Structures are given as structure tokens and as C-alpha cells.
Image 1: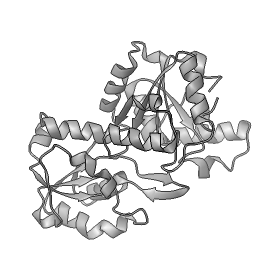
Image 2: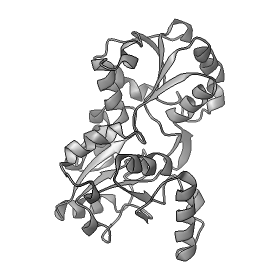
Image 3: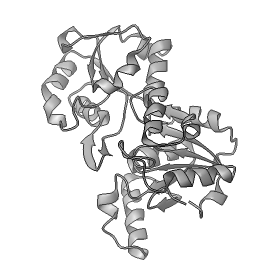
Length: 282
């Protein structure tokens, strides 16, 4: 990051895969944030986590990240909560008040203050709230019957995390986006909140307060969400190669071959990269 810092005034930082792995903070991250802060750089954390920003901040502090670095967080969970609370969008206004929640108990703070009724049976639901698998070891196929029934009943699905997968504590697990993609394949209708959709970046820009987008870079470990989202929002994309694409790119030795592999991966994903770094470290 020492080489990139002079080129930008602010950063949109992904969390999972860049700052931490859901269990531990990556080596060098806190030092890097401190150096960016000392250099007068601004940064906001943007996560596809299906939880409220305050809950995400609490989890980061528990991992050992200084509280001052956890004040500027934008999450897909927070964006979804705002949409469901306001109901200004006709799509959300028509959802109804009863839903089946596909997702773990750690995501339940998403429902606070919304006046929704969570039902256990999809036959009694007016829509589906999808925050991810109930258990980390599950696969998309485990949800086939429920998803098929929801599609037959024409239930709309709110996908609160567009990610397909994430690495938690070194283990690759599916996310809500994988379930939502299968739901669409079955004919279901899905509304996504989070990266790579550009709407969520508007909040980040307001928090950064930097008018010139050329002076902002988004740093993430997913070409599909972080890279494509940065492109859609009109800012530079920086890939952390040691995250989701680590298995693909980590085997390639440093030098021209590695640079070519990164460029080829970005081209296959349809993403324009400004730079790539192994991890978030100074």
C-alpha cells in the first residue's frame, strides 16, 4: 500500500478477505490502517455482510481492530434494513410483512424495528429473506426443495449478501448470493443489496467527502463483487490476490507470469483493475 497511497485520497475497503477472514484480523492490516490514517487518507469499510453496521463494528472490535477504525461502515444488511423500514421503493412496499428467513441466527439483528413476522414454513411466507445458509457446511443443493417451492409460489426474495462464497477461518463456504442465483435459475425473482450494485457506493462517497472519484480506490478480494462494483461506481479497482482468488493466483510465481495471470482473471471477469496487491499491508 505504500506504493499506492500517494495516488489516492480515499479508499473503499472490503472487510471479509481484506481486513479479516471472519475469525482473525490479517497480519499487517492494523499497521496499514494506522499508516493510512497518519498520511491523512480517508477510508470507509464496505461489506456485503447481511448484518447492521453496529453489529459488524462490534465483531471487528472483538477481533482486536481499534474502535476508531470501525466507525465508518456501510453494509448490505444496513442498506436492506433502510429499504424495508422506508418501503418507498414499490418493490419493497409490495413484499408484505411475513417472511421465511434463510440464514443463521447471527443475522437476526437485521429484523430489529421492521415489524416483520418470521414464519418457519415457506407455505406461510409472503417473501423470502435470504442472508445465507443456516449452517456453514451446507451447500446450495440442500435448499433445492425450499427454493423450488418459493419459485412455484412466486415469492420474491431479498438477497442481503450478493457474494457467492467467502473464506471463513480458512474454509470456503457459500453465501446468500449462491442461493439467490439458484432461485433465479428456478424462475424466482430476486432483489440484491450490496456490491457490485452501484447504489450502495453512493453512501460511501458521502462518508468519504471526496468529490473527485479519480482520487478514490476500492480494495477487495473478489473480482465479481469488489472489482465489478468499483467499475460500476466509477472508481479504480484494486484486487487483493490472497483472498477469494488465492487458489487460482497463489500458485503462480511472482513476476511477469503472475501479472499475466491477474490480468487474464480480470479479463475473464470483465473487470478493469488499476492494481493488485497480495494483501492489505504497508
